[in-house]
Length: 257
Length: 369
Image (cartoon, rainbow over the protein chains, first blue to last red):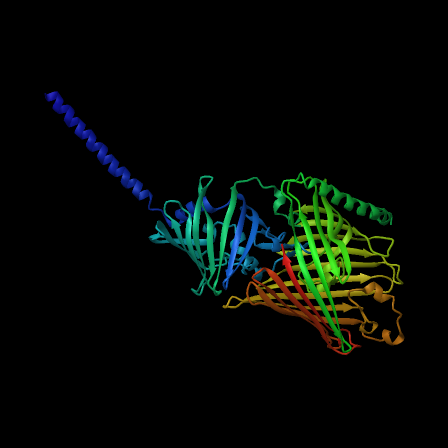
């Protein structure tokens, strides 16, 4: 009888020990989830930052009740990108971005011209996305200092809200950006882009994300240039292959011709 | 000279080769996995008014291009044009060439567009002389010949080009290098144009640079043109800038200055046809004229929205103030029809360099498919 009681007491002690261990462990897990701003952005970058990729996309430009559709395919690596338009009106028009410079190929005359710097902020092919927005390949944490503003719910999803201010000395299109990042999937849900004066310049909303090759990726985004009236551009990724092999000759002026 | 002779002999070969490529392509289309046909259909109305007389020409054009699949065994670039003007029907190729890797070189053989643009309104160092943005040139920018491109690195390469010239036994040829340095796009070129005219062959040397200076795009060029009767030094500097309005519209401004040292205005200098021009007899009076010509060219383009834009190009000869005005307007209808309007008029007397009373108007309605 005594033996049974001892075993029971021992079982209770073990149970208590396990319970305490679990509580402590779960608290540690919970503490681990209190991610810092940089970690959140890095985890988003793990999903959205491209080492190499081939993609096919569609831009639906809406302006004053009218719509234009442009199709493109693009190759990207960490520093460079090459985009080629495939819709009838722009077929064969190509852009090569290397670092901060962009070259454009006009198929009609087979002309290859370096684009002036002031054009890079303009809407690419009349869209709300600038050349920089589409062809930008830098990591956000390299360009902005981020701060976590809080946790919110966005479109029914738990999300982190962060503010990024440009790193001094870096050349960026937007001085400040506020981003909403899905807390579970670590993919951007919304973004507001501001000028140094505080004026809002653009607003991007992710309408659809997909899990591709084990990573969540925004496949349908709508961008509104707040400086323009009644315009928006939807960017729809039709196909994307990550970590494809891209030949060195892809990002050359020769390939652009 | 030996090269020129070989090139001359290749003239027929190129044409035979181009035809063979086309036939080969057409036979292989059935087996190709994804051939696409695209192009443009246009209705062009040219009106001109001069000496109280109005003339008009109406033409329709169909451009067709076969887009061959990426796994097609040959890289063939093509664009066929069918032009109907009155009862005349003309079929010709804007381009029909084979692009082929040969060791480290990339060769383009056949009819091909050649444009050495760096953003200038008038390009004094282009392979074919003419105004870049002054419409009539765009139709004449293709050549029949062979281009060999040797890449040195991603942004540096050397191009050799040899092309046929109508009415000349020898071929025109050129060597051009292109590189980038500190964000600037730099080129150097040499072009030999054969001529049986009094001045003999024309040699043209050129240097260009294009880059950014703060918020401005900047470019410059130096050209040296010489033969027995011509010795021109050409200097060009230009800049461009764009501004976004809050309404979403956009203004693009461009201005450039060209100095042609050695050219005389009274000789009826024609920038676009120097060799023909040199055959005109000189007079004593002409020789007494100033030996330099200066031009200011501007381009203002206002993009009202994604579908419409209005603009004006001007070319002014500073020697007499005569100015050529080229207004333009374009609008894309919701049916995707593109309407373009382009005019040409001059301010200046008949005897002035850019003067005259002729007014031209081109209306173009096109649909791309």
